[in-house]
Length: 146
Image (cartoon, rainbow, N blue to C red; front, side, top):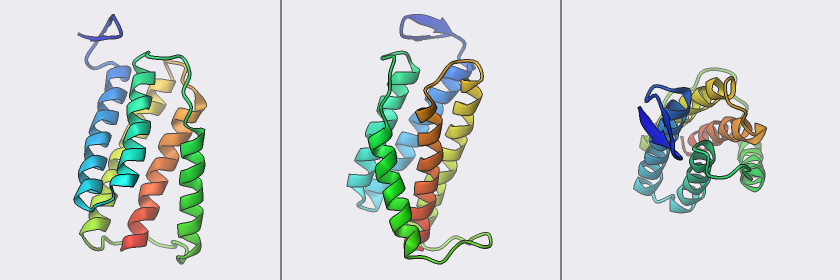
């Protein structure tokens, strides 16, 4: 058992799984982005994820990620407009591409944990949308750097 906002829950609960995945994602993003001098991107994403972790843990009833979602959507559209469409599986490129792909796969796993949690705990729909767009954003960044 472990404590979350004054309550005891199993260490294998869906809530702890989701929070743990967010924690790992924050660490991976910080490592990848700082290693590659993308701290502005890292700081924005990790701030969102930290806020999201607090929301899941019960620190606050509302979450606002719409501004970050809009920024990611704009960045995705702008970047994709400069690239060819994807019509097959992509092979890994350079080190930054590999690192971003790693962050993307962790984001996808985190998203799956959030979907499982949403089946037993009411979550604001923006949470799942954010996680989905974050992995797409990381995918697009990875494609852009090759």
